[in-house]
Image 1 (cartoon, helix red, strand yellow):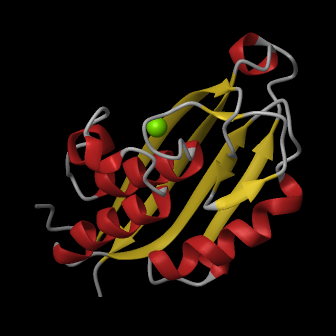
Image 2 (cartoon, helix red, strand yellow; image 1 turned 180 degrees about the vertical axis):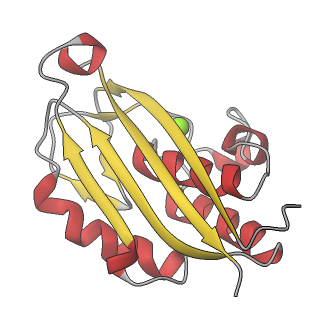
Length: 162
Ligand code: MG
């Protein structure tokens, strides 16, 4: 365990689009033609955030805590995964300083939903919405995101000890 009173972590995740699935990002259902494929609700934004928290705390990644294919997590709400992850981080004495999350998607438009996401996420990590940055960008039509094959997300989290 680090002796410094703060620790930073980063996370990255990507999920493919799939027909017949709801699009859940940041714990919010977003109107869209397709959702994301995954064992849980495939909330790519929350998965990246979970990995940022786990990384900052020096814990193993989200796949270790919630193995893909484990029946228990089939269709799981990623808000519940985040709640569990934050409990582990908190056990080690950490508090969230702030998080900054970027969603990379060609479609649909994410920005109109970021305030709602912050309201969902903040209480799960004992924070205020102002401590949760969520930004969205396209990939300028390049690569797998540009071809609308899926959505990617990156997150950083700063933990600190009082
Ligand atoms: Mg994932």
